[in-house]
Image 1 (cartoon, rainbow, N blue to C red):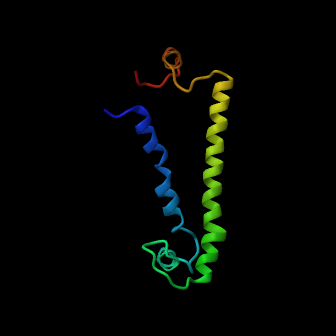
Image 2: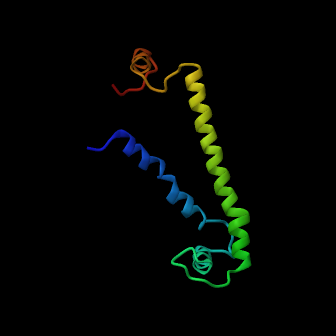
Image 3: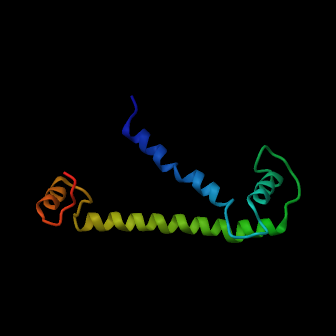
Amino acid sequence: MHSKSGRSFWFYLLPLPLLAASLFVGPSDQVSWRHVAQWFWQKGAFWGAAGSADPLVEAVLLDIRLPRVILTFLVGSSLAVSGNALQALFRNPLVSRTSWASLRERPSAPPWP
């Protein structure tokens, strides 16, 4: 039987493929996903291959795309933490039985039961 903590562990690993995929995407016409994959291959990130890397691709990856991705994850996590702190501070649960029941009693309530 799977425990609840085991399932939540995989949920926290979900952003990692998005982090890797976002390194391959960008507005630069000179650095496509093929150039990035070749850079990773030449740097030895895949299976230990060695070689010289293109300095333009390296500059775009390390100076533009990687900081953008890291900053995005930091801002998103700080918003999640601050939202959770505010919910705990004001003791305002996001969803409870009483909050849904009060929505049904109002005339402007949504049409679902």
